[in-house]
Amino acid sequence: MSKTIKTFKIISMLEAISFLVLLGIAMPLKYIWDSPQMVQIVGMAHGVLFLLYIAMAVYVSQLLNWSVKTLFIVVLCSIIPFGPFYVERKYL
Image 1 (cartoon, one colour):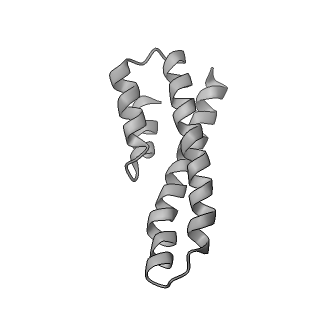
Image 2 (spheres, rainbow, N blue to C red):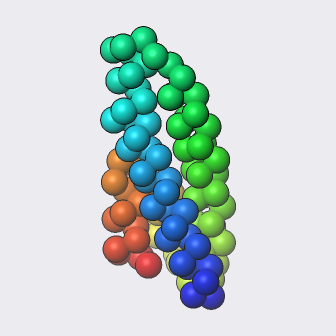
């Protein structure tokens, strides 16, 4: 079980970082400097990591017997910048 939680922590951190890079670097490059290439790369990586985060959140919620409310908060945190860092501190 601890290996699964460690894997979820890694995915969570990577998802959060990819989201911040997408919002803070790739999007300004696209809309300010008209360079959309980074959005394509980072956006794809973030999308895959987001799906992995959601799948792992559901799996970990079953392992740790989270309530539906807790699972909802964890999933909601995936769309808020810095949210996955909060999840790691509070629920893992």
